[in-house]
Length: 478
Image (cartoon, rainbow, N blue to C red; front, side, top):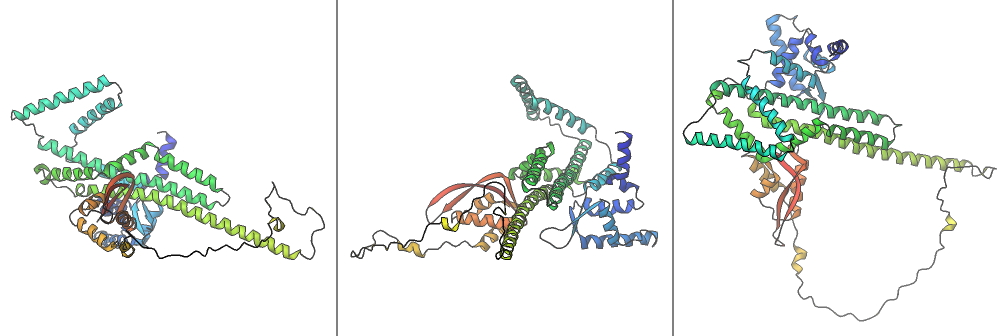
């Protein structure tokens, strides 16, 4: 942190710059109220403009008309240009959406940390520090003796605790310790959700780089793809990328999701927590984690789709250019047909082209007439052939499958494809499984995790066959 770096941060970093503005109280209070207070990731342009207009009206009633004289549209446009908000258009809608930038996330989190807390938890943080240091030493050691020694120590502690419980001695956390650990969980969860903004921002920067390179018409297609895939692999193979993949695989486990729901419900039901004033942040934690992770995955999928479209457009333009060149050659040939070039070598190209002259083709030959055998044919007898199979048609009712999905989602916020097939077994073979995958691919609320596989039981009543198929994990959400 030298002098020049701090000066650059002060002048150019959006997180610091927002604190220097005259209308910083308006920006920070409104964006915190709209996005962070209720843990909202995005907001529609019309809805956000209306809320900001109402907020400005309330402030002007308190401080006079001279307070914040601009319109809601002007403020949102300025905040977007300054890097506090990101405005984008989702693929499935023509209405713009707004979301916080990573710089604004950091500013809001820093302001929140400045608030005076009920108390600063030191015990839980110290214990967490000890646990992390022990885990680093234990998990990074390749010495079997050290690992067995650590497991034996944990075993002795567990056995000692079991003996205390059996003797009627139960050590519970006091009210202060419960609150301290609860606040620590909230802080960690909020920082986790804020980190997703930075991860998504990194992938969007990669996408922007790809689009800028596509504009350069002189850049060869192979060179462009090499740079793109190299950058994409660089992000995926960084510590951040590997950590995100591990997080997503962990979160996509239905057992872990159910365990998270049970843990959050049990903690919020504790008397020490239920009697305390707290927001509903933890209630929506799982939904927020899934939405944030899915948003990052969709950003990477859009990058791949953008590459595919670029290749299609590039091939179309190249073919179009080839046709134009051929037409130009034909037009020139028509112009010089009555006055051919006097020189024998009037045209030269590199390498040796493959030229197929008309006279090199074989001459036409009369085909031989086939000889027909006039043997007598007798009417055969069909023995053992089931002609009913010709009239049996397999029909998959897509609406019935969608109704089954909706029925299962009434009792839970999400359901996997495997859980659905366990509740409603597949009875029409692979065709029914493919129909379910087709429904998931067209449903915006469904998540397809291609990095995790699960086995689905498939049966066919017509053929009495039963087998398992490994497919990507599919999660249907409300």
